[in-house]
View 1: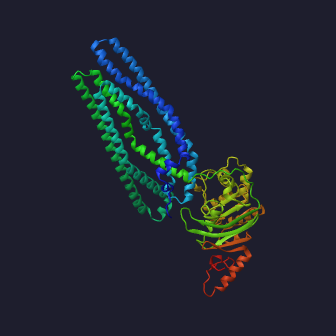
View 2: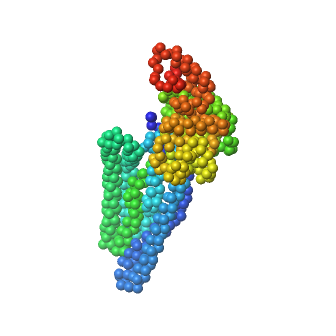
View 3: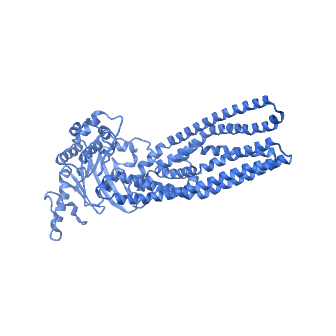
Length: 603
């Protein structure tokens, strides 16, 4: 399948220009607003950081020459109080950063959840499906770390430089040159680390996808003797991840160590310059010590930024991807009106369907109409487009062209939650969730009543089966329904599709794992649904289920070649098969089974 990862459609520059109203930008603006208070605390902390330099200046210039212990004790008490207040404000700032990061996560919960449930329907590669949650975690982790404090402290660097110039112009020029050098180191770090960090992130995502696939298919891998083969694939993926991660780690380690060495050189150089000025009688010993301490404080934000640069790059790339994905998967505008429950007709008009992220149509120009109480058998050979059409009928796959209407209104005119109440859907692979049987049947609706749950189970013919389980409707089924057999999962999935008396019910191979009793229960359920004025569409190859339906639609290579009453369609198919009998050898099977799989295109 062609890869169309949403993040590849947009450039970072276009986001900065056009993403003013996307949820990520709104959350960032709110976080910036909350950072205002933290910036005030940072200002107080930076002012208090001057206390160490001033203390050393006063000790060397006043206490030692005068040998006044009272002054020493007074200055020590003052600086101790300043340190305590500084520590309190630093702890308070760290706690506030954690809360700002948490609120950023909360602001994006809806958008991220919408992306997670939408991306699989857009044909996105598995490596990108879980990327939004990982990106959000990276951004939140950086926002709650000490990284942002470096940028909050950087505006105070000119204040420290000004203080150094006040000590002596030579000291100020030395500090300015050092600051320019370490800023140049920061720019170099940015340019060199961008590609390495991106490659490490992508290799990590690919490795995680392979891990998930191995865990999901562990039984098949063991049974078919593929353990060694997947071990080789895992080794290749893991080695690639380790190499990229090592390359990025080496780069950050080298740049970080270089920045630290540069800071040491600058601090020692500041001491040397101060010593020269002291020897030349142009400065005091207190200025020499205080300037060295103040220089270290001026460069501390840059050093913190360099030490957390890896997290910064990952967070920035994560924000870019989050903007792309949230914009790509944004919900459509909410309809202004709540439409009434459909109850009259279901119409498909010139519907063309393509798989997500592809342009080649699987189903082309299909049209039909059903009124309340009708049942449609969707027939055709394998790969004729039946499942693809069923996904478009319930709104899973968007139509490439054409419309699907309930009582005259296109299905996109309903809210997703409202439309879901009017539709019942049972896919080929029944997907149940970790929870009780009752929760799965009622679609995890907290307002569901016991009567509605039991009614759905009774219509599906699974009520007695559920009662025989250890805890009845409260029986936990485990992740994916692993504690149930395939037939039990299919029948509970049928009850879930029936729950709420939906107007449209689409069943894709609903009897693939059923025994005779299960098929009889399915036929009764279809008849009850039709008597309740629901429209039922069934994809099946077994005549026992098709007998409960009154209409049939035959697909051949994605096109509708026959639509009408079942008896008429089967008669036409039978006549065609009879005409082609000398040229085509019939497959062995029950004589009563309709031979729609062999329908030629001209029928």
